[in-house]
Figure (tube, rainbow, N blue to C red):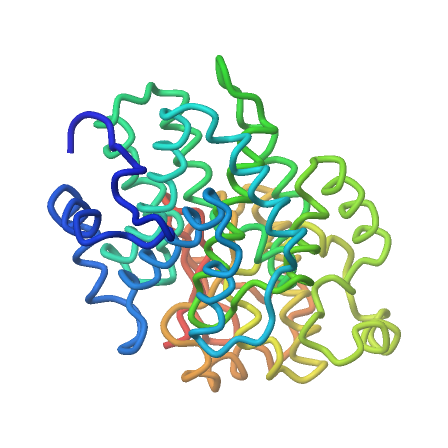
Length: 364
């Protein structure tokens, strides 16, 4: 694809992608068509991308009923309010004041999941961030805009991860400070990241947007909101990492003597899928182990990593997680290193992939 996309020509008056729009995307973005082979049988990544694009355009043109119908058609009974929808529309309009801005946001949403074509779900954020560069270059965007797109797409689940109890506020603050461009300020980057997250959530097959979710995400739309959250969570320590527990405060009171400091620096990827199945002692062991790994990184015994994750299907292979966590790790010496990129704990190996920032436990 070379040249600019005439975004408005791809949609119908109600905000759905037209037959012409779908043909255009299939013709000029082969990766878009290939997404049909990824995801669940009843909900492919291609379907998800279509719904994401249509969610975006329905907000742009003010079709609130059509936006809510997306969630209703998937069985959801919770929606954002009309006031929240108008608020989101104003944020999108602010960031789409020119045809160039409109094309930029459209490309962010179109390519945000292309990474599943090269490595599956577990690495798709980072790989999508790498892959998207060529599309923005073909559309005529210069390097600062391309770098910003890569940062946004490479972290497009961050807002959601934060409120799942997986992500850290310190990671977000550092990410925000990395963005410097000749025309766009970090606030613009943060608003685009917010838009992509919100529309991605509304287009997810199992997590449609609700008024409460929107309110949570909106709390950190301004960087001062993230700073306040960082202060609050640093004071409360582990409570923000325990949304899966019925009462995180009771867990904390019962286990605070065993919990190390530094929880605000942990970024677990996909941890919420298994965390609700962990016993208290296993969760304590996981948190302690994570702190030791972070400390070893700071001591340069391990190479740099951003995320702690679990390979394969962690829910299906949960017995490996139990093997990893049933025995407490009380010191760094219990972590056996083969190199700065590889080691093992309780017989379970882990490795660090230098180009995507993951420390990955091989649990399957």
